[in-house]
Image (cartoon, rainbow, N blue to C red; front, side, top):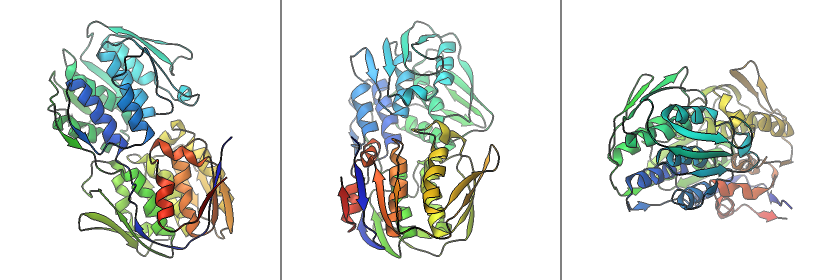
Length: 407
């Protein structure tokens, strides 16, 4: 039976989010590269987030059946990794994972010469990798607007292909910073990917062992931007973050219009209050994981939002657009779909004194709505979903003096 977590309203906060996890986006990439290098590279500050721990355990697993649970990045990266390293595996996951499309990646791998079969529904997990004997082509065209994880998965395995690989990205490119992150991390492990315009060119190369320290997670940090934006008084320190980060969600630091000032002080990021705007426009194409955070801030602060780039939210842990619409209405706000590419966030004009929010088995729903506790009493259903990316999130919230009860 799922539990419910209650947070008593508290309008001011001061302290350090000491349990802020390391980036799982970076960690999952370097774990694949370490495996491709067949090395004992020393990797430091790996997160205890479930997604990272899954990758750490599964990438070298001798088991035939690999259960990635609800970890989308793990499913996509391991599909490419096991395929190109010619490991016969079955990859499966939760019921929701079986609803998340993987056809674009499977089609690309099939064109390279991998024998892959769908075990239930065409285009979706579970899949069975039957083997890879020889490379059939060194050039692939792939849509750039569905998931950058498909592109990153192919990039990482490209150096070990006998002929290398040229990827042509068709149409609009989403989450471009994550593709650039992959290329940068590949350089650290001794390989190069030339990324010019819509073309990524990767020659046959050998990964090398390299020591690496994973920085903190900007996606997790975004919830503390929300706490500061919504609080009456706030002074929050976030450790191990860089303003020059490769992570796309670092974009949250540039949005002072949300009412937050971010500055590096003695090597740590300090967040304080700033004057906000009454209306903002934001394109989430390159940082879709910030959408729930920003939507809740706008809804509660009376900021009208003009949003684009939300399309990929429909195939995340849940349909995040529908989930946001349902939960925002509980505080008198709405996310209106104007057309297939534009949304308007209509903020609340009067907040309730308390509200209870569903999480839809989505870690980001839980953490995006938690900062409303600066303005009202909040209940979060199934709070344990945060284990996916920020396992000690509720410990950090408690450390700022919020009273939390779980029942």
